[in-house]
Length: 414
Ligand code: ASP
Ligand code: MG
Image (tube, rainbow, N blue to C red; front, side, top):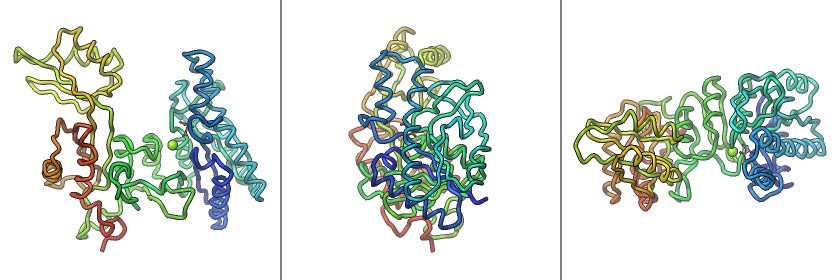
């Protein structure tokens, strides 16, 4: 059975025009002899009647703090509405289809309402429908507990449904249809000449998603990686091939190539705040109590730097007041630098390559951008900078690592 999972995001199911394009995508795959399983998101964005944000608002109007179980019941309706509308549209154009909730599709989760994890997938019903030549249209973002409670997978969770189904069906690939034509080398609002990446590895896309790129849910990438399911991120609205994500990155296939690329993309996160503990006495900061108290206060920290005399880390701007209070209650002097952004270079090709940080430092220095803090992993280097420098910094790194030139795009290696 050659199965492909096609997931359509909110804008791809929101209008009649978009749904006709969806039908064309499904017909195209079927004409290639593939069996298609469709996963859909809720229609449109906040303010539109069936969008997830609109449903959340509705619950909040009834009670300012909705019951999590009931909120999941309500939110799950958005995707169910999409399945019925899309299935109807498919049938009207001659494709026999069947709308399904997450539970009917065999998506079993734990009971963490609002942010459930899939614990198993039982694709029996989907297989039966495929055997009957019916195209399943599955509600993304939702599942059921073993005891029959409806759950949701966290915002953006339809990607997770699609990849989990793809893995359990042994799909040839999972196609994520959206309103952009793939993963970009940078956010085009920050780097206007950013290009679409044609191939990248799971590692890279997962880092880019964690470091701020908003195209796919990071947990969906983790499942794809674990089960080695190729992903293709592409536009519903044009024929461009999009970005193929698989185990091997394009450039690694040709390590001798002159165009071997160290960096695949640049990402950024805004609204960050750098916290430095001031230590007048020169004594070591009491890090055990600092980190424990922050954890108890529900503050998540990042870019952590601890030395014998200093301690600093990065938090989201919206928890800065709470953090300040917690640290002051420990009698510590605190310096908060608000209005920061984190810009990251991401690329599997940087592993073990000398000189990457030298290039980062030079590029930012030449652009007049000061580095406040850094962190790195085997495939990323991140720099915390002032938000005012974000565009300058991202553009400088984009140029320095050869991402401006189309000739260096993956797949074009000589
Ligand atoms: N509709 C859900 C959300 O807005 C899930 C998704 O779109 O993937 O978060
Ligand atoms: Mg999404």
